[in-house]
Length: 353
Image 1: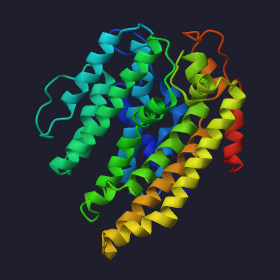
Image 2: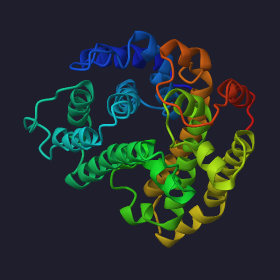
Image 3: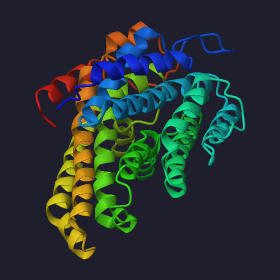
Image 4: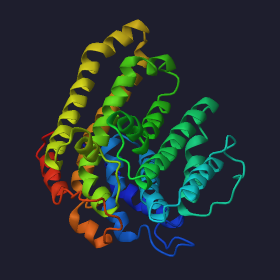
């Protein structure tokens, strides 16, 4: 189901994006990463309304702004550093971001924001980290840094023309997709009712990894054409499977779909069979059980909302990609999935995995 506060989140997140400069020409380079059209095509507020349908208006506004920030940065980073093959600049860019996440939220930033990514992060950090405990702040900062550091890993693969192996790819993909960031926000909202040791169990880690992988695979199916054909990317599970198994793209898509199904079944098994064991082992009281079940429910909403968002937005359609720009990189004889994003969207609208 969908948050009733979606329209408000759309308006407020777009106003916020405009205030921090995301819809203007990027200084120095002199071109747009996003304009109003691209913002609307991504419709990340819809994603927030799908994955957090029970959020208050204020919570959904904040979620939508974080999703705007992460999605914009995911477009900004390769446009500035992959196209110019500027690894040194990329590392400096990600290293600077830590300066906009200070321990003292009210203190002045150690650096002056010079671009929309820095300005947006500085604002969101103050709005989000203030109520957190020092430990919670450190966990949240690490989740953001893991995500931004993973952009450099992806760029390095691209510059070396290296398709990652499956194990490395899956582990890093959870970071590049921002899974840890989203989940850490959800965890921290549970306060201290659920002991941290519970979240460190194999069962909870398994639930989080299953949910993260499922969402990442969905994104890779929808974004294959955008990343491979139009952006010269090499960090996509479909391509990883193609190269590792030596199969064509259609076979690789089938394998990725099977992986998604396996992750979903694993998630369901852990909820049904192993989560009750965790509850008994830690002798959780009623309040802690309620918070834990709510967290698992949020993971389920995340898994349901991510594919629906991909299916409903135009960000990944061929028409939208051709509207944006011609391909900037070629990847040998690799061909795109053509209309695959449309076909996958139809499958998800039909409720099929």
